[in-house]
Length: 396
Image (cartoon, rainbow, N blue to C red):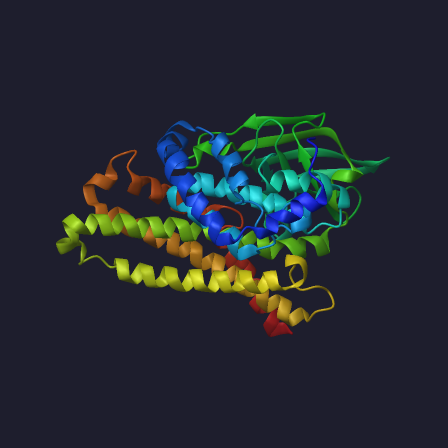
């Protein structure tokens, strides 16, 4: 693992305002990302240099505390970074979310080793990271069985099983995982990498979009994970702590995609406005819906960042207030999914026959929009979670 700078050097990062980061990020998106979007989408090209560049600009460290290499600007700036990238390329925006999620796991852990040695590297993009919580998050929502099992041994745990969907992976990348503790109803979460003996990455089948996301199946055969890489064990309280930020930052993907769809519609209207005006969804309607969703998301992110250490409400805080805050997060994520589908469909219809050509931007946005609604937690899972919460409220 690379050496990290001392704490005083890292604290200097606090001086970076989110506005400065976003200006630099937009320049990088226009000059470095935009020219390769077609290859990312159609050829599965992984934009490695750009991913590192986002880290250099500060896009991953906005919600990370200054003492761990971050700026401490909060979750709103993290959402804005994902939003800006997703507006140009949802695949790369998703991988930026994966990177930020990896920092979020370590930021909210009590593991001092990970915070001091790995978090600064992931936060600055020197080390790339992902998240393998698709299966665990479905399991915790009562949808499917957890795929990994961990058995306690001297100095750590031995893991066995297979994770089917882990993105933003590659040689030396780190990612978060969860596993059931053997002979127990408890679970653990950890940060692992392909460098651990017994870990195998297997290429997945082709997707209809996000081909450049470096998504693999991860096979664990007696993989020893030392205690220094454990985020939490048991991890029920920890999962409740990270889940709101995990879900809320995903909204940035939807915000960016919808904004780009509106731009497509505006360009199409320059030529076909006289007939597009008869379609159900118009630019003004979608722009108003986007503004509402964005405002609510930013407000929730700001509220979360004002709480202790960017953490959701603690045990000592009101359980009812915590549930209501998480309910708002779920509602924002649902809105982002539904609005993405609606905006991409509208963009396709506004463009017309040209949008039906393979490789066109409207066609790509349509394919990408379904990812926003399917990526864990999927739209159906979010609605189930909301239903379960409301049902619980009625009972209480």
